[in-house]
Length: 337
Image (tube, rainbow, N blue to C red; front, side):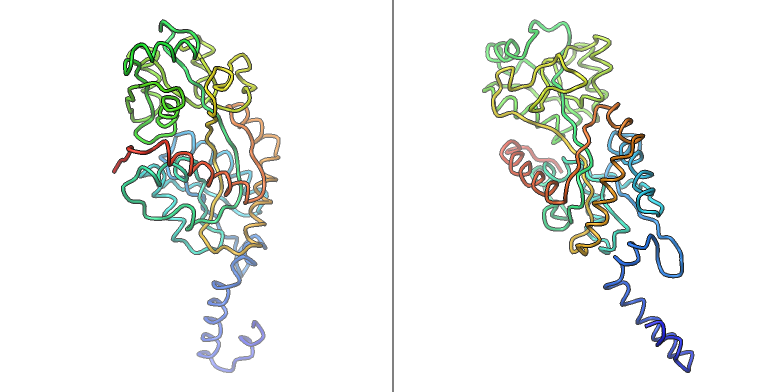
């Protein structure tokens, strides 16, 4: 095609063929351009990593740790772009509508993909159809913590107290439909108890009220709760993972504490627009795996209580589908604007 452009005898013909060349590149050549680490003409294109939450939160912080590691493996700049709103759905919608050339990707938090579709009155995109799963990145578990002055000290004692005092126990969350909101709903469902949910605008203010005694309890990400636990400002009762967490080895699981069929965790995954070329998905998946193998990134994420989670795109897609079904049954009757 380059030879055709150079052999054209007139300026108009050169311009016309050049336009056709760029159109062809946009249609079928974008994966090749990205695979070479840049666009035609030697200019390296910037990959934008969309976060559906405001800067400074846990999703944003993790994305900003991940971005330079991914940039190193791809050989091109990677920048984080915050598009907050609708529980992360604003960011997901932007990526769903983007050209599938691998230059605008979604650093997705699991609630956007598995909870928001059930509780938002309307969602501009379908996470299961309008995005391409690229790679799992990390996962995390929650821990159930209580105010240290509560009359119960274990999860079985909490369940017994809740049965004797229906609705008296109040738990906080980061907001209606947040993963720690539905974690409480699932506990109530599995244990056959009634709990009162109190939504906050974030985890931090909810934790402040647990410490102060205005709330009885809450679920929080282990990485966020560890400092409060180690300083004995709250008491941990159980972790929501299948196995005990390495950073809280003395804390039992929900199953060990008598709550059967309870395994709840969150995750972050990399997505692109639907209809991405398979070879581009493969390249981005492999780059993500290599990035997560970098010692510096691994150490930082593990220090924050996260578990590295790698695998092919199918691993991410299958987990998202499984949890979408789970939260559909838990979220009945829960709906937000």
